[in-house]
Structures are given as C-alpha cells and as structure tokens.
Amino acid sequence: MATLIDNPSGEWNANEVYEIQVGDPCQGAGQNSLFGGLGIHNQPHQQLANRTAYLNNQVNGILATLAKLTCSLSGNPSYFEVPMTDTVLGGLNVIVQFGQISVIGFTASQLKNATVTQAFAVPFTTACKFQNAFWLSNAVGNPGAFANCMATLECITPFALSEITIESDWDNGGYPGGGGTINIASSPTDGNGLTAIGWIAIGY
Image 1 (cartoon, rainbow, N blue to C red):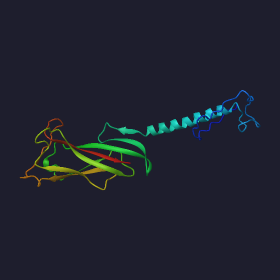
Image 2 (image 1 turned 180 degrees about the vertical axis):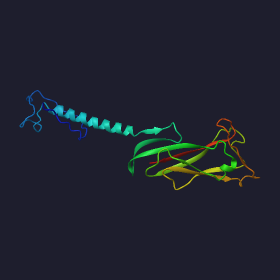
Image 3 (image 1 turned 135 degrees about the vertical axis):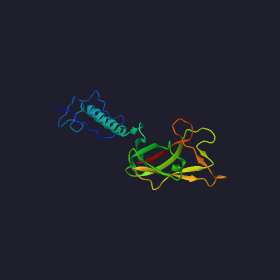
Image 4 (image 1 turned 135 degrees about the horizontal axis):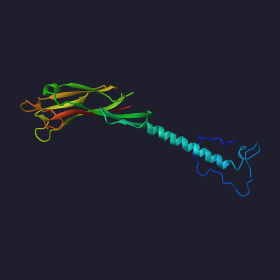
C-alpha cells in the first residue's frame, strides 16, 4: 500500500491547503496526475501531512529545550540552568549557582582577613561572569553581628570556573577607639551573630 511521504522541512504557510472544487477530476497519484503526479485528491492530504510533520518537529524542539531546564535546589551549593540565546554568543546554557559557607562556631580571629572557598555544584564550562558574597546573620538589633568594626566580603578575581573564593577584609582602624568585635553565632537560632557567608555566581 502506497503512503504519502511527510516533508517536515518546509515553513508554515497560512491558507495553503488545497480546496477540492466541484469541477475537479477524481484523480489519484499517477504519472500524468496534477501537482507533480500526486493527484488532486492527494494534494490536500499531503499538505496536511507536511503540516503535521512540521508541528511534530517544533514540539520535539520545545521538549528538547525544556529537558535542559535543570536544577538542584536541595543541596549546598544549589543551581539552576536555563538555555538562552545570547545576542552575540548565540545559544548557550546560563547557570546560576548559590550557596552558604557556615561560620557557626568560628572565632573572630578566624574570620579577620580570612579566605574561604567553595566548589560550584556545576563547573562553568566557558566563563563565570558575575559573583557576589554577603554575610548572613541571626542577630537582630544592636549591636548586631559587628560592633565598631566591619569585615567586607570580596570575591577574588579572576573568577574560576570550578569554585568561588571569598576574602573577609577586616577593617577596624576606621572606627573611633577601635577595639571592634565580631559576634558569631554558636547555633543557627541563638541570635548571637554571623551564621554564614552567602554567595551567588552566574556564568555559562
């Protein structure tokens, strides 16, 4: 039994399906048939078959793209990955990663001018374009985590593909009288001070 061969490579064209007219001959496929031998009665079926194949290709492409929308939010660090089309670079997978480095139980001296690292959940394959780090604290009110001092967090450049490196830049000289202290929590809920260093990194 002969079958029509789908042609999914064409574009979608509106109002293209042939409408059989009253005066059209009853004509199937043959050497002298219209529409390149396809025949009048096969032409609209062929056009619908091509449309179905075209739509099938489009759906398969969408499903393939959705399959790349991956994430892991249960661990530390966590990440999510989204396929995008860059205006210059073209198609790429953008990866957003974030995590926490616990400082619970640390002493103040361990955090002053300290350098810490954490491996990414998924190494970037091409470039890490952005990083940021910030303190997390369970202390509410005065004096909070820092008293008459500050430790600024700095992401070390150049950005690595497999890990983030953060430095705690201790500044005590700019405060009257000096003698500042860093209050650090001994448990996640004790309300005494710093609990972790949070960070985020974006790349592809």
